[in-house]
Length: 148
Ligand code: HEM
Image (cartoon, rainbow, N blue to C red; front, top):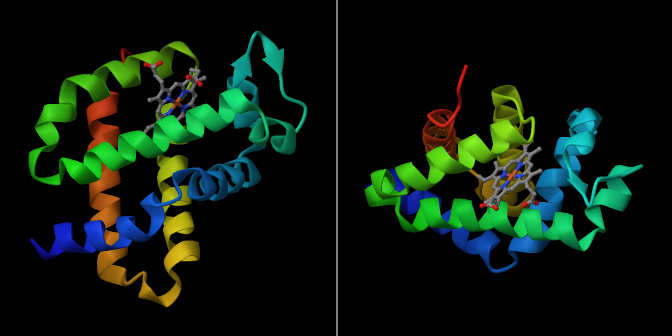
């Protein structure tokens, strides 16, 4: 469909350098909600600043993992249900580390922000709409792993 073509076209520009773009995404996330920093702890160590977090190898690995999940969703656009079980489990893992559903929507806003930064005026309203729909589907699947 056109929607899928718009997503693939825009992702192509980003996916060549996932780490760089993921850093833009998470820098924005910490700007909007600095409290999220405390959820990222490696070896029980708390980061003292977003800068410190954004330069730790473990956190950079998390950025790569996030970008890989998005990449998988783009690859499986026609067949998102095949990711359903994986995403449900991923949701469970995030609930266990203290992530709230609201924070996932904040990540979605930051994803749009990053795409806009990267694509400039080429990031059309139709593309924004298509990405919003895709990311919502990913979060919806992850939310199935959430227990009230
Ligand atoms: C793992 C936090 C959003 C994908 C983790 C871990 C933490 C974490 C603490 C475990 C340590 C690690 O692997 O680095 C968060 C927070 C988020 C967030 C606070 C948002 C506020 C996301 C999103 C995705 C994602 C949006 C993908 C769409 C992953 C993956 C793993 C992971 C793939 C590895 C899971 C595994 O080990 O099987 N996350 N995360 N995260 N996260 Fe996130």
